[in-house]
Image 1: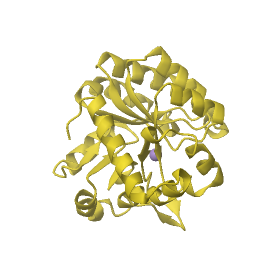
Image 2: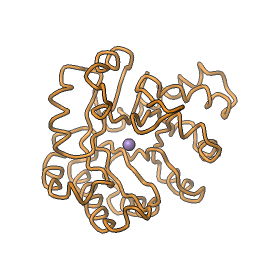
Image 3: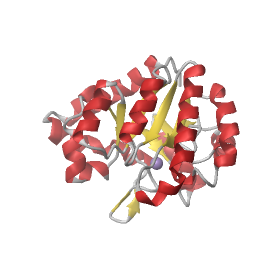
Image 4: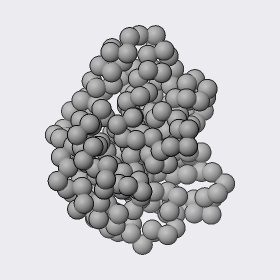
Length: 247
Ligand code: MN
């Protein structure tokens, strides 16, 4: 099992599920919502070899965590993975938009300076802004657009820019999600849970359930599930190879 975007530190029973996540998943990327959370989580998860902690500053808390920006920027050279970062263009966060943009831009500029990073990106209502920043800092690394919810046109641009897309079981259960996913080339799809925020039937999606997307993918792509799993695993390997990350 593989999960490229989970808020593992935010499950109510995080410490109880760590061993299971580490055992069942070949690889789990635990994204964080603030640089200080990254510091704390990295310490707690340290002995779990299959779990990597990404350095993040979530756009929804851009205002509250703005004073942690320096810690974020000064830590990028130490990590392989950055996330969750991005911009949220929905009305609820419009007041903090300029702070969000400043944080995101300076983060990917720093990723470029550091030689490129694997970056898990939140792009709700802000895909064109995200893509234009990535275009400006085109050596920022490998962007993974997590839970993509933009338009078909934006999707097409992101595909042309060779972004990866991490897809979760909630996204793939909606009609819009299926429609978008059917337009993504096989080689750009990765699995995520986005738990505990992503919930199915009122229950958080667990990191070992991220790969459940394979059954829906097998219907969308019209190919046997074993082949789908194979493609997803190859995509994951290629992602790490591109950025020369050894896990
Ligand atoms: Mn998330």
